[in-house]
Image (cartoon, rainbow, N blue to C red):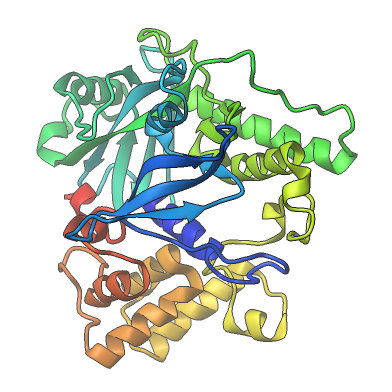
Length: 395
């Protein structure tokens, strides 16, 4: 999974007017920083003061809002303190380290391995990441930082856990291409957080809720250990509504991010039903009713013709290969990253004659860089090589 691509696809899906019937497209703003909240005479939040970090003058501007939602991940407490400086902190950062090795650890790109019990009681996974085996992850409580780096102890730990399965003869350090880490936002429990009332769920709702909870359980098993003190901290998410109206969605996992978003929307509609009664088509979240951008063919969007996703992606892959003469490995890569939007990436490349590989060992192509700047709001080099064409994580 390319988590940054998942994030981008979610954002650009949200920006399309009427993508799902009745859906109002979001306005996206990159490199915009929240400076403070705008409050009314009763202290209730009615907007925010922001600044464009790419503006040399750094002028602040106001954004009015019926509700403000705090989805700042490990930085959620910073936002909560803007609302109430003495609020109790709830986020506990935990560092997770991943290693990328040269090819050969997995027999095919479609294979994956789960090591069911490490010495600290977690799971270890080995999955394909752009053609290379990615191994992870650790779970170490740490301080908040903007420059998260893996420790040598974590690298050594992962290698030690691999040896019973791949032996001592494998050159782990010689085959290691990169090591990187990120912070996961574990959240401490709070008695004021409202639990979901499942008593009036329909059979369909109960089945969906059961599946969601099973996914979260697997995520907890995958990332929680016994020896570093983080096992007692929740891997689930929490939705908090402050007395001034700030809605904070904290914790959770990528594996359940869409259900978290839907629960947050449902919570807002429940807390403030009168604010949206004349402006929304639906009274509950609709995330189960549509896929993300890049999931539909042009025929589906134009004619409403329903097609199997696997068949659609195979048709697009073949079209790139036979019609646009794109090498098969590049076509597979583009489909995996952009879905049906890969056709736009290739069309931009043909116009500008930029379908060449960025590096002979990888399927990334020059037109992806152009597409990132023209259509995906990339501004700085790291926006491209880390978050859109992630060569920096591989080697």
